[in-house]
Amino acid sequence: MTKTKAIMIGAGLSNMAAAVYLIQEGHWHGDAITFYSLDDHGSNDGAPTNTTTDEYWNKNHPIDNTKGYVARGGRMLNYRTYVDLMDLLDRIPSATEPGMTAAEDTRDFDAHHRTFDKARLLQGGKGIINGGHLGLDNKDRMLLSKLVLMPDSQEEKLDNITIAEYFKNSPHIFQTNFWYMWETTFAFRTRSSVQELRRYMHQMIYEFTQIEHLVGVNRTRYNQYESIMLPLINYLKDQGCKIILNRRVTDWEFKETTMQDEITVTGLQMENTETGETQTVPVDADTAVFFTNGSITDSATMGDYNTPAPENMDYGAASGLWKKATEHFYNLGNPDKFFADRDASEWVSFTLTTKNHLLLNEIARITTQVPGNALNSFISTKPITDLGHEDVNMSIVVHHQPHFTTQKSNESVIWGYFLYPRRTGEFVNKQYIKMTGKEMLQELIGQLAKVDPGPNNIQDKAKEIFDSVINNIPVYMPYASALFNNRAKADRPEVIPAHSTNLAFTGEFVEQPYQMVFTEQSATRSGEIAAFHFAGVPMDKLVKNPRFDKDPKVLARATKKMFM
Image 1: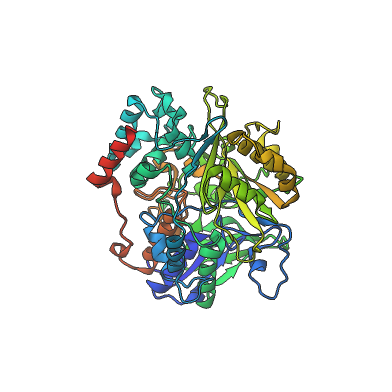
Image 2 (image 1 turned 60 degrees about the vertical axis):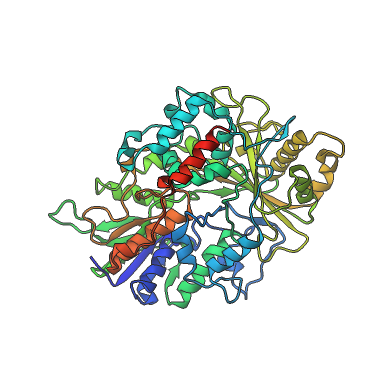
């Protein structure tokens, strides 16, 4: 059912992508599209601390970037699989590089800064681990092969099965270099959905052969806000789209009909989070509603150098609204599978800003590589899992500098995360979730010193490093890995649910054939599908996705790699 106007609930990547496709493929006017959102970036953020992204880019607003920078997460791209994202970015101008599209900007940067990680895994007493030796045994190989070769038609056999349950007869896999790299590259846990692992193995199967160096990883020139979201915001504003911020949509009004299955939105109740005022926005028959029904950064909180990030027990703005929709209709999924089990989904990240490059140079010396998008993971030297295995304590990303356009030449920005925030540090006797920014830096220095214990150890420079800190911002994200929580295929709604006349679901908590979540690819694809549906664009015009899992040469190389 085609429409002429759209309301977007959420102003993240998927809904902004939908708006671009409505304008360019559906030939809509931008002023027919209105966003209601808490912010203008979703989970693709990045700005000076205590500065909103809107303030950051308001040229008439003085910016205080003396307190460091913060990005709750970071994004790794892959041109070979992120084909819908690159199509989207090719349609809009770069925000920082004149004369280039946002895609050309990213390709140009990547061409001059290729990823080749020489120190993907690090361990005390061993230094840099040879990740090219995956360490799989025959049982591991058999179960992985079975997963890769499982046809799409049988995927539902993996409903509600965790990775640990799937590999219950071969727990050895969780002590291999393969697992340490896979879990920290993509943020899987042993209790994550094996159905989701299967999709990753299918869509990223070629990455299997080069995971120890991450040579298939592409990065944007700057943080994801400035290189991805800002170009979208600028384009959509130029087209006349209305982006209304500080709005939390709290409830639905649906059409009462004798057709019990019909889903028709007639109104939206929302709150102005600045003033506390409430309003109801009517939805007429010509308006489509695009709803991003979950966010991995909902309910996130920030600490500072001397304060840990507090816990926010809010179920989540987007997921809470999703749950209210499921109270009306049976076929819209099950948000509790993703948002009612924080122990399976929570992370703590940190963004460290220093006023010189001392720490950056020490990391470069220890890892034997220049800064530039390396992902270094530190393996514990003692058993720390429930099964009594070693595992990764923490991971850091050393970006190419500068990572922000307002970053000074003498400043460094480093990002890191703890996939299991309830574990206790090796050098600070606290759970990671309870650490201050200063204590997280202390833990990092300890991990680096353990890897490189010889003369001129980094510990000898610890005081100078601490003196160089501008800020280190811990961020608690209760739902960061919620996308991977154990689930059944029906627990996520379709982009266009059956019997929906004007409601589409977008983002990474929707069910799309073949797509893997936690990617800008799946987010963009969902917005593209929804836009084509309501603009009446034939679905055969969707960007064509490659199927590397059906390429005999790719499968042969992956099989060979399993025996290394």
